[in-house]
Image (cartoon, rainbow, N blue to C red):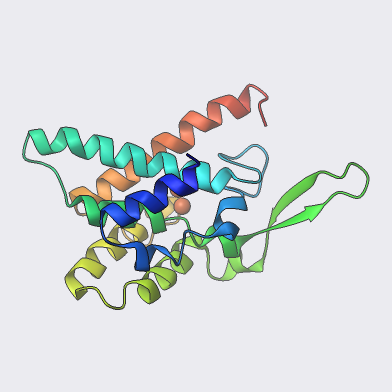
Length: 186
Ligand SMILES: [Fe+2]
Ligand SMILES: [Fe+2]
């Protein structure tokens, strides 16, 4: 089963396939996770690989925290992890190097003017229009806070367990991938 199929199955399990349609399509599956070969999950398909990993890390960590009464709502956690970086589709563009035929990813003006965190919130806002406002806000907070600090691009810092889970799992997925890149994988 591909990562995309796995995420679509999870969305069905939580009854959020309608909302998730805003993310889970072919375009999302082909995008890069960054605009520099040295940055985490660079390259075609990198975004889907990263987001699948963040969803898995979040849900697995939550299973443990539930055993000590510190768990959060799986459905909202899934949605926050699924939507957190969808705005990267607007931030990056691919080009073909005419000499080598290689696909190269670069950032664009959208990244400077709006940035993926804000765009992810805009997409989430559209996708969640039929959900309760309280639930929409819980996920919005986690998306806004997912970089953890203002210095790292988040307008607010995590205030809830759900937002901390998303930030720490996002950070872990990114740093574990960086190690491979420093060793020359990219
Ligand atoms: Fe991000
Ligand atoms: Fe991320």
